[in-house]
Length: 62
Image (cartoon, rainbow, N blue to C red):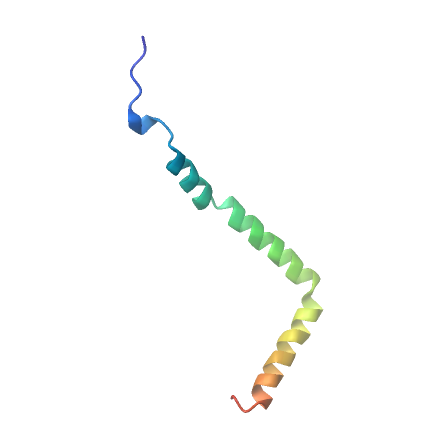
Protein backbone atom coordinates (compact mmCIF):
# COMPACT_ATOMS: atom_id res chain seq x y z
CA UNK A 1 0.00 0.00 0.00
CA UNK A 2 1.00 3.62 -0.44
CA UNK A 3 1.75 6.16 2.19
CA UNK A 4 -1.21 7.48 4.20
CA UNK A 5 -2.46 10.89 3.12
CA UNK A 6 -1.88 13.50 5.76
CA UNK A 7 -4.64 16.09 6.37
CA UNK A 8 -2.35 18.91 5.18
CA UNK A 9 -2.02 17.21 1.78
CA UNK A 10 -5.76 17.23 1.12
CA UNK A 11 -7.16 20.40 -0.48
CA UNK A 12 -9.86 21.92 1.69
CA UNK A 13 -12.82 24.04 0.66
CA UNK A 14 -11.43 27.07 2.45
CA UNK A 15 -8.11 26.70 0.68
CA UNK A 16 -9.83 26.47 -2.71
CA UNK A 17 -11.80 29.65 -1.99
CA UNK A 18 -8.63 31.42 -0.82
CA UNK A 19 -6.83 30.44 -4.01
CA UNK A 20 -9.70 31.79 -6.14
CA UNK A 21 -9.81 35.07 -4.19
CA UNK A 22 -6.06 35.65 -4.32
CA UNK A 23 -5.53 34.57 -7.92
CA UNK A 24 -4.39 37.67 -9.88
CA UNK A 25 -6.07 36.64 -13.15
CA UNK A 26 -9.48 38.20 -12.40
CA UNK A 27 -8.23 41.64 -11.24
CA UNK A 28 -5.80 41.85 -14.15
CA UNK A 29 -8.56 40.96 -16.61
CA UNK A 30 -10.91 43.53 -15.04
CA UNK A 31 -8.24 46.25 -15.25
CA UNK A 32 -7.52 45.30 -18.86
CA UNK A 33 -11.18 45.64 -19.77
CA UNK A 34 -11.36 48.99 -17.93
CA UNK A 35 -8.32 50.27 -19.85
CA UNK A 36 -9.84 49.25 -23.17
CA UNK A 37 -13.13 50.94 -22.26
CA UNK A 38 -11.28 54.11 -21.17
CA UNK A 39 -9.31 54.22 -24.42
CA UNK A 40 -12.48 53.84 -26.47
CA UNK A 41 -14.20 56.63 -24.51
CA UNK A 42 -11.18 58.92 -24.11
CA UNK A 43 -12.72 62.06 -25.69
CA UNK A 44 -15.83 61.85 -23.53
CA UNK A 45 -13.80 61.17 -20.39
CA UNK A 46 -11.47 64.08 -21.19
CA UNK A 47 -14.35 66.53 -21.50
CA UNK A 48 -16.04 65.12 -18.39
CA UNK A 49 -12.87 65.59 -16.33
CA UNK A 50 -12.26 69.05 -17.77
CA UNK A 51 -15.85 70.08 -17.05
CA UNK A 52 -15.66 68.72 -13.53
CA UNK A 53 -12.45 70.61 -12.80
CA UNK A 54 -13.88 73.81 -14.30
CA UNK A 55 -17.02 73.50 -12.21
CA UNK A 56 -14.98 72.87 -9.09
CA UNK A 57 -12.79 75.91 -9.69
CA UNK A 58 -15.74 78.17 -10.59
CA UNK A 59 -17.73 77.15 -7.54
CA UNK A 60 -15.29 78.88 -5.22
CA UNK A 61 -14.07 75.63 -3.70
CA UNK A 62 -10.51 76.34 -4.75
